[in-house]
Length: 178
Image (cartoon, rainbow, N blue to C red; front, side, top):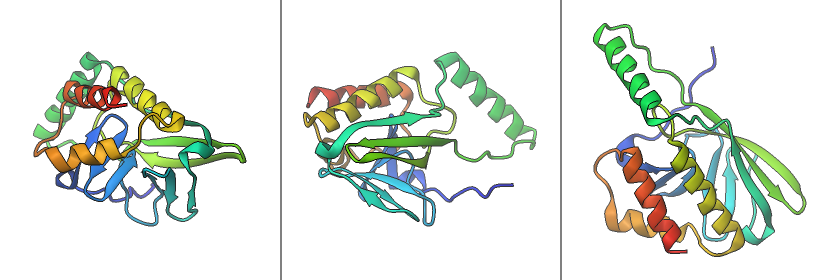
């Protein structure tokens, strides 16, 4: 059985779309502890931290794609939450590993793929995935930077886990700042 990489606890940051935003920075997916890889998004560009570190500037990129994203509609997410709650009440619940996603960094000198871990317990809404991808496109086009995300964190520091509609609203706010 594959060992689950330890993730940072929720009080250290917030999931907003495909991102984890905290005082430590902005991550694509959940921040994992070494040796698991992390995708850190800086104002200069994305950086892979972990066993095979690499970094790029935003202007070096042609694209940044994320695949294997766990996406479900609201009814599907609620059904999964309900099933988990019932299983926990019956003491039959076993926490699952975070879903592994693949990030493909497409640069002028080639493509680099790295795994990252989902930071949601069940799945993302299709809308927050689409908004997250638009924001990443804005970073590549130079019309936005992850600084908007860290500024939001410094001003807001949410004390609870944001619901999908709240996460979508924050993503829309960030897109409007572009």
